[in-house]
View 1 (cartoon, rainbow, N blue to C red):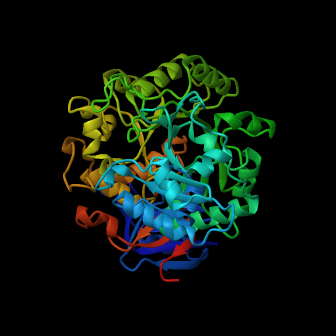
View 2 (view 1 turned 120 degrees about the vertical axis):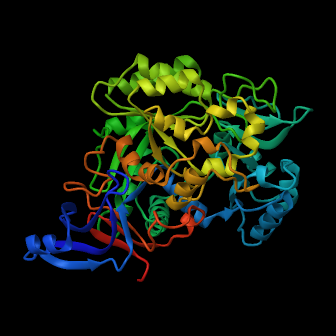
View 3 (view 1 turned 30 degrees about the vertical axis):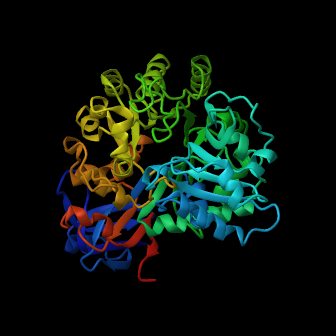
Length: 531
């Protein structure tokens, strides 16, 4: 038996302005679209439920193409430092949290961002020790490519002033060669490995907390990368299977597989797009570089505000090529974190050298900074780029300081990419940015900085139609499912995001304020704001 949806604005998103009056769904699939009268006449004997939208707006279900579901759940539980405007405010929050710590318990904070502090001077290990000398402390930067640790955490990790930098990472030291407590990129793992293991039950609870929140934001699914960090592939994979079981929760999770656990996946006789009804495995995740905020994104030219620094290559060239060769031996696509133009250059050359033969798409995650060569390579390759529109809001104006006015022209260049035929998908990189897809859509349209209210690179602003499609058609295309997801057409999955207001009629400045009325997965209402 099926459902008839009617009484609101229903945008198919196939072409700009395309709309229908009603939709009939059955067994999780869109069976017909058209007028209410026609659909009621054709399916009256099968309709067991009619949903009157009462003037609300139905869109294809939003999907975030790059996020960290478990990390998002942890951010909801951990100390959130992302909105704090000074080192003093951060330290006060840490001091307040210490009052509730038991002996040996780690103090974990998420999301500090010195670029939004009134005084952007980094907090030192010494200051952390003054706040919390007896409990280990780990504070993750908003980009998740840097962390701060106190002496207790470093002692537990057996790190001292003589500990060498690992490949692809930096233990930051002062002018005397003493460690400061700041760890960049792969050096973070030196601290994280000392933290106690979490249980599978804990992971399941965190996933449920995260997914409940994502559904309330209108997301029907998300492409996530979690399978390496919480005790290995099988433990984390089973946590997802148990948490998103299609009974208690319906949410379409597409899980990238970190290259370090690729062989673990293969040992389980699993491969690309294998999994369960609501869990599928994705491309092999690889990190090519760091982040722009911490000046570890790998650039072809030095940082404008840090002469001599080109950023960090996470792997040497030989090992990077070996990882990709190994993925290709199993017919697996790759999804590569590449923010700097040098990282994008290197990865696109390797993708060209080792092309996929099975129709799947490789992915560049971020693709923030391009040059003419990398843009041309992206045009010519079957690659999707997972972009984060809200990075424009949070990275400017300091991104100009990092790159200079000339290079910024091909940075965050979403319009240029789309007009060049590059396939782009929309994402938040939550918990790094707000997981609200309406926030991302608004950022793609306005390109307005949170910090100074200025619009940056207005020539790269997207239309509202283009921006919405990033989170519908774009996310589906990134995983070669554009023939069955991302549109409201016959034969497509019945995944819908239903908004209280017509997104195409509200002022662009107010897009992020639109409330989600319902989220629908496979024709079932999984979030209802009135309940």
